[in-house]
Length: 390
Image 1 (tube, rainbow, N blue to C red):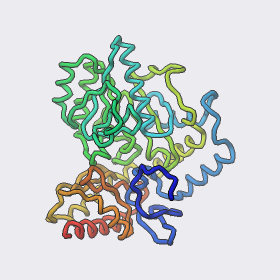
Image 2: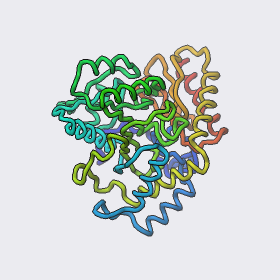
Image 3: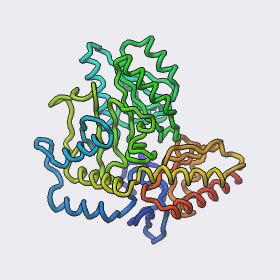
Image 4: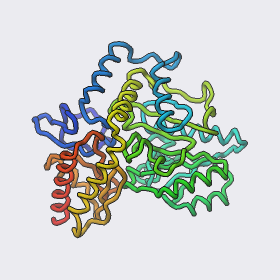
């Protein structure tokens, strides 16, 4: 009898170790990793520069608390500010914690403007986490069901629909911010248009709202730029990060700029473990490797290669609705539920994921080489073709 809570539908496989873009199970079988721990393992597995940096830091200092200065935090905040154009950072342990910080910051910002019931615009099909506030912001009824009453103060609109935002602006004077993902990961790899981002920036400036981007899954080089908003040439007021930032070591961040900077004062928000030296070194090392090897650019190029190969290999196959994505966030939408493809992928020696019931999701490590990408795509095409033919 297992003493684990039954809150995951786990696959019947356990991995013992990894090397680069491959994982190995208890029987020594190898699997090509097409999901990277859900966009977490940016540098793959057992990266020599990351493991060496972590080993050195473990021998120096793991945790001290935010009662004191943490130089590694200051270095990481400076590095992220240089890459993003943001002004300041708060560090935590996960994406939902980063989004909780953003929601609290928006409410505090609203109260500072004299709005006693501040509201945040959020999107349909979005995913911001599983804490009570972030699941309330999430646009997926399945995630929310059974956990009512939800946190109030969210106004939901369709994704990538500027007219819907303008309608809210005309009728709701309690809005203080817009929170959304430039590329919806859990929602099915839905990519917003660059003009939508620029339009949102304009509306937020006009209304005095905060533009808050959840880049927990799409940030850190995955879309072909360091951050997805950089494709549109804008800068948000708030951005949240996590997943790929520490290459497997838990770390989250909430960054602020412009009118959102300086909103938090001592005592407004905090974290016991957030910003510990070990997590900061993991993030600093990840960013250093990404910069040294220009992996954000590489993600854009490799993503185009994989998408083209998928489109070619699945052209004319009945049951394929659309192949979409940006950089190394790729989705294949089918015309039917396809969760069974995950097990079929395991049989074929590849790790994939299915989200939004009908979308095969690929989020490979950014260090994947061309030959590995071709192998992953070719095996996936075979698995999808067999599934649809059955």
